[in-house]
Image (tube, rainbow, N blue to C red; front, top):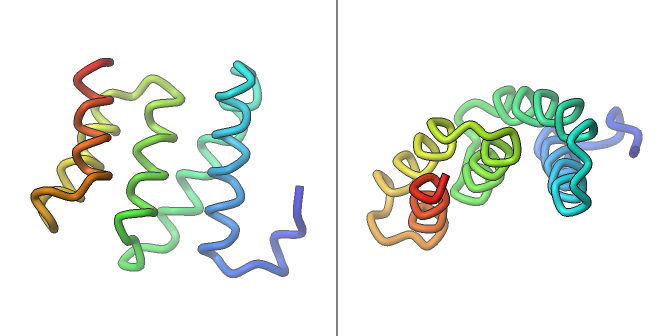
Length: 98
């Protein structure tokens, strides 16, 4: 794990997301359970600085922990800003599949 004191808040959030994504790819549910809450908290600290990419990451973290409502909420937020944004449409599809 990187030294989070040397990273910007966005970099720290993205690193935690990457860790969750790698754990999901490996099927490591223990790592997902450990790092998903930290990643979500790191993105929450960014508050108004959440672009579509960050919202996609949040939605994918929610998917990793089985939170369909969280995935759908991020899809809706992205699509409110841009009705045809691919990230929002992707998350909407993932939520429907859940």
